[in-house]
Length: 99
Image (spheres, rainbow, N blue to C red):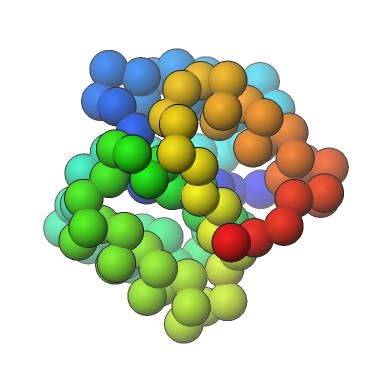
């Protein structure tokens, strides 16, 4: 399973990836809007957007790709490790509903 995180904190990027690896999830982290971000998230299984730490441009770009490719989007206000862990656990169980 491949999941992309949009937003969050630069200093926590390594921790986000470590938490995902514990669950066997390939995680792509975009704390800022990056060149070619849309093409890099086209084939992910889900998007997690941390709404308190994301630019409007990055969120808009991610949402456009998600709508076009029918990718589930999960939005959380908090950008902590525990929030990501809970979200990834729900994704693994298949019990979460998309935004």
